[in-house]
Length: 355
Image: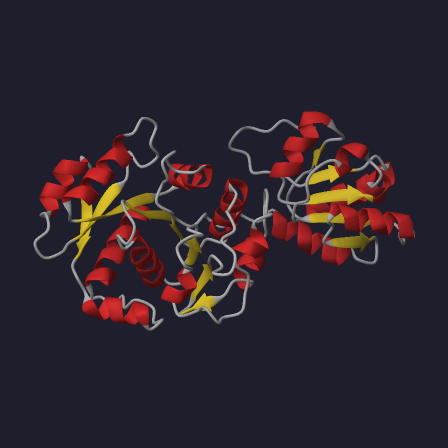
């Protein structure tokens, strides 16, 4: 196996001991402008299998116990120099192979697939995490507004007890996958395929909770979805649930740790600001570096007062907006025009997230 530096792009992994087949595969990879990484088992195989942009498995390796013990992942192609027997076809299906490429007949396809896999990867989209200091703070409205203002962003509803962001976006009848369909996701997921399977509202692909089943979202599933969506280059906005007595769950912690912008929405009330202070000042809190968005209200605290109580800077404020409430009750997405308070704030958030 050739050594790589930490900055080297990941190389396609080839798993085979068939020297004739290896010669053909290595020749195709060279024509695609790359070289192979080879591993047969142990930690080297697990690492390369996880990181490689493409895995090429020789038909001779389909019975490998080390290979079959690895989790399924996208981008696995079985390569053979002849038609596969039924038992090996079954092994390829069990492995989750996207295709069996028969050489030399499918050499052109395999060359194109290798070339596509080693192209410069799309830059990951920015990640915005939004949460509320208390129930009804307006975090979902802000998350929806940021996603709408971004254009093509993916909106992820991580609050399974929140009634479903598809209601707020007017997409409750739209067809597509929701969280109960995806809680079993783990590891690497094909981003474009995931996004295409989601309901869409006003140009925003949306992964919402289900009102019939409040299924908890495992941290592994949430991070798999977020990573897959970001890998498409799209901005991703996650509406996080308010922490319980034990603090943020592991999924929320993982999202906040990776977020380019973390926003805590705080109503301009003393109790809300005090709750936000507890949240950001708790030992090890993932909200400790969040910026505040103050939901102002008549007779409430001033923005500077909220910042002083919570001890975090304020990125912006959201004044009362009757039209916003009315749109939400009628299942119409929030208005985010340049002259709307929500639209202006959303663009400011995106500027921070994009650096």
